[in-house]
Image 1 (spheres, helix red, strand yellow):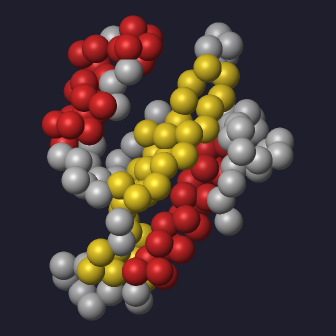
Image 2 (spheres, helix red, strand yellow):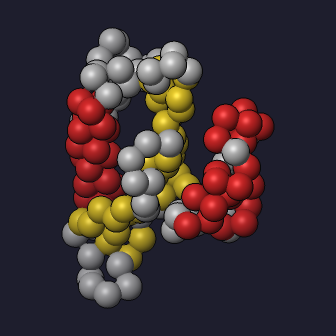
Length: 133
């Protein structure tokens, strides 16, 4: 189990602090709702206008029963680009919630990739493949 204090500290690498500034990075990390039990992650990257490598982390939380309905929910988050807010996918059961999260991640990444001029890269796939359905 990862609590918000642990995740915030773990997510701050020395390089990130140096590039963005410790104060701004810490404030942003603390304003994001934390995924408590992470089941999967993926790192992608792109090179910005100044040719600096920027990392994007995809984080998927464990699907769990929704507190306000008979459905399941699966939290996910994109860190390093976009709003970075934790989002929630829903489904009839935990498998469908997880599948929905993967589809929503793909939609978000494809949208952001279009904004970046198709510069987003995942080392695990062929060029242009971000590794999501």
